[in-house]
Image (cartoon, rainbow, N blue to C red; front, side, top):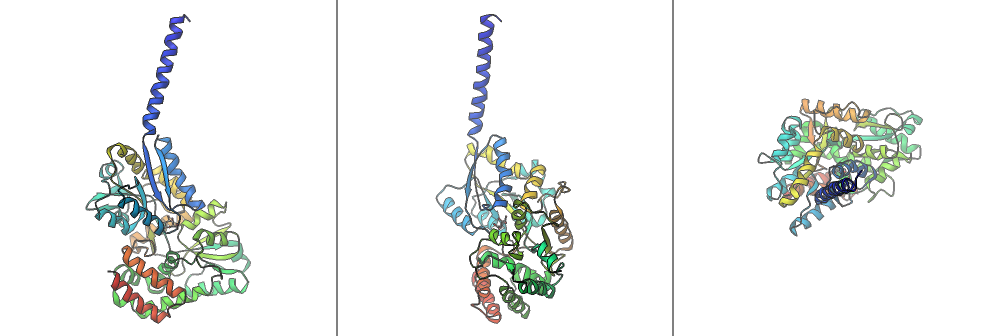
Amino acid sequence: MKFANVFAAALMASAASLALAGGAMAQAKEEVQVLHWWTSGGEAKALATLKDKMQAEGVTWTDVPVAGGGGEGAMTVLRSRVTAGDPPTASQMLGFDIQDWAEQGVLANLNDIAAKGNWDATIPQAIQKFSKYQDQWVAAPVNIHSTNWIWVNKAMFDELGLSEPKDWDELVAALDKIKASGKTALAHGGQPWQDATIFDSVVMTTGGPEFYQKALIDLDPEALGSDTMKTVFERMAKLRTYVDDNFSGRDWNLASAMVINGEAGMQIMGDWAKGEFLNAGKEPGKDFLCYRFPGTQGTVTFNTDQFAMFKVGDNAQDAQTKLAAAIEEPAFQVAFNKIKGSAPTRTDVDTSSLDACGQKAVADVKEAAEKGTLLGSLAHGHAARAAVKNAMYDVVTAAFNGEYTPDQATTELVTAVAGAQ
Ligand code: GAL
């Protein structure tokens, strides 16, 4: 090859590499800052599917993790950032909190992305209620979690000859048998949001979906102060007798680990717990069992994680658009939710690759949606606004720690809810 040709080739090559570099440099400017509380093993593994997807699309991911299951800490950090005029591109958020932020006028309009992604036709109305504000999409829902599950150590159940408890009495009998064997019957973390997660299920199994709706969603004072609610608090007190001495303050994923390693028989927790079992290399049906909280089969107390998108400058909008679009991509929906333990939020995705517990989650959500028993989790911000939710947290946790008798707790609940509205 003549010198001139060689030089030209070299020039072309360097021009091409400069263009690429320039392109990469331009692409590298695309960045998303994402605030979330997914810091446990399973949660982080699931979130990594989104981080990887963004980075593959040339978007730099700046992680803003705030530990603390249930998200109380994350929401505190979010409030300080927005107040300082420095909102993240997106923040993990639940239910009514999205509506609260939308009312502040600080969330972006995602309608164009939603139209391109056919969100209106594929995301259940029960979820759209939280994702939209005044007909604008302001958040991208990523999953459908639910709280009315128990997670069981299969070897222990087999050893004790236990089968799936189908109602409250059978649950108590199973817990008694595990306790009598010397193991911790109920793995639990004594934190308000975890106590409230149990409360979701005890309300549902005690009063059924109509009572759950009236008491926790309609906030009907008669239901909140009823004999049925007193029975709920009596049952919460009964469950308190099955936890170990070190339960107070324990993080939820460490309680999951107690069931995973055979120290405890079961945990009452949302299906993000499954993410911990999978992350520990455990298999559903072989190492652990997923049962609906006894007496709640046919109902689902759901909570959907969403990424609320904050208004950002023009130079950050492309990256934010890519993030929102990625969250609703069918392939991502399956990849993420397989690891997270939740059902996909889109109803048009192929869920055949989900494991048995994932398939059950999808089927239960579909059945509950058809029966009108797909009800928002109080514990995770889908039944009442934050002020009411936190007021209930206080009463439920105080009662769980023996500061109120069931009678006093019932009266306190009515007062606390009225005071928070
Ligand atoms: C819930 C959230 C789940 C999981 C859980 C424990 O509020 O929806 O995705 O993060 O907290 O941290």
